[in-house]
Length: 182
Image (cartoon, helix red, strand yellow):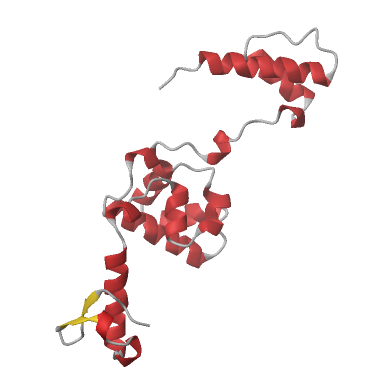
């Protein structure tokens, strides 16, 4: 394959990669060519971290989203500031099984933080566990009554679970209406 981006060769002479077949490069020139190509192809928008998912996707660690989705990026940075060994142990507690994955994520997060690529909106992001709506039908009667009581509604007249679910929907609507908008 031919590359269309200019690169520095191992002897320091610039060479137009579009004019030279890649297989004619020395191993050192190939390494430099790939590095140049990757740096040239990325834009600053590609490097900006806008969410935890975006960071995981950019580092090919999307399989960790299930273990890390309940944590805010800001909280992870706080743990990382306490030291890398502490952060690695914290990731293990969160369920990241492989040491290589923990190390890769620690490297990616610390690099993004050091380079100032983490967007302010990413730090304010709500964990996905909190974003999921509660399926009221899956809650127990006791949990439904707690939810209704928390909204200062009465559940004494509800004798069937379907009635409790309906009252819990009213409670959720009331709580949403009373939330301060930001």
